[in-house]
View 1 (cartoon, protein in one colour):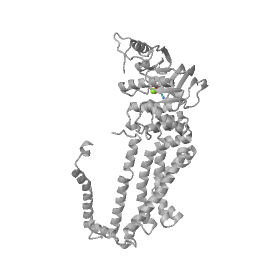
View 2: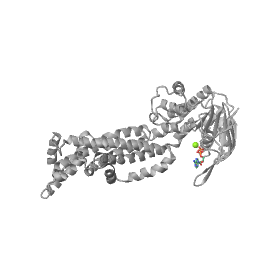
View 3: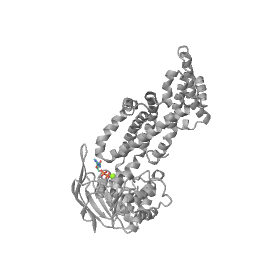
View 4: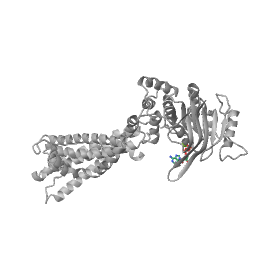
Length: 258
Length: 267
Ligand SMILES: Nc1ncnc2c1ncn2[C@@H]1O[C@H](COP(=O)(O)OP(=O)(O)O)[C@@H](O)[C@H]1O
Ligand SMILES: [Mg+2]
């Protein structure tokens, strides 16, 4: 079933000069799938997520969520922001709790959910820590727990691991896949990292440089759990790289593995 | 900061004491030069008078403690009222566009008016006495608290507001859970400024509004009693309170808040 459908979507920002971020984007996200959107920096990935989140409205075209046009943000579409965007004055548990409070969830439900989610993202024992005491990876775990606390139908993830070191990033990718398999949430995951898209996605949608348009949709077709250094992943990475704008065939190609 | 931060404590004591010693020497020198023409008390006379007053000798019908407590009480009461009203005004401004349009210019302009400029109006409204003094303190404390808290409310990051929006928060909850806590570091610096400013105004207002008690009142009365060393004692007490506000009052609290609120990275 199609959960999110974008038809001919364009976004133009009207600042001191108009910037067209997206142009004619057609995209369908199926319920339960892990969809990666891959594209170079500045191609409109964040813009695309903001549209689905309901933070901004398209200049042209239409977006439907579960068959209805998106008019405003809501807890059915939870965002994991690029830099976590936790409230620094609240503890880990407080950050998860406040999202549910603002969503109007009753107390008993919140108490149960907090501990289950903090455990799910591997932060037991850090309930009372504050964001400034956490590493970047831990902050993103909190952001994931907070998003899940809203019981969304889709997780919108904006390069959530982009600022992490390689080791932490791979660990969080694995944990995210585990959470995804456990919760069966739809995930719309945006990244500029080829290896990340190849490792995570059921499907990968490749965007062109600004203004972003869909230039390829590739089915990963790889079984899970995946092996990072397997031939299947390498082939997929190569295929993705060839579709990306600015790709030049090189005699000896080393796959990016950041 | 390694060189300065790690210096040994005798050096620290030395460098803390040195300016005080220099100040006292300058004071003594000026007093010695002026003495033939005017009875300016030097540090030694003032210290003697300080001991006398602290041991309970009356000054203008009251002990020095009564004067100090009177000033402190006016200050605290005025500050608490001013800060409360300031926070209420800021909340209103942060809450409603209309209130912002109407009130913000007033608050902003009020901030530019020195507290003492309100003296004629204070006396006109409340007559000479305690209420007029407190009124000026209220006005002095109100503006910095309101202006800074409004700045704090406006400093909310786009992403933080989006977290509230994606949760489907009502305006009230966004205000309570995002805007208000986010404004606290700014609010604290507003409170600190308001506290310091209003202390200065207490002393000055007491001089003009004739309150019968208070450190400022005691200083100005020395014109008639020619008890200049008592005036100096009062000035010293005023400085001590000022220093306590600076270093004890909010500094630590502000530091801790700023660190926790993530405005600087904890090192
Ligand atoms: N609010 C905005 N106003 C004007 N231009 C913007 C705004 N947000 C993004 N842009 C521009 O739109 C383009 C796409 O931005 P973005 O969606 O953030 O790209 P990405 O997330 O892929 O890096 C960029 O060129 C960016 O500078
Ligand atoms: Mg982006």
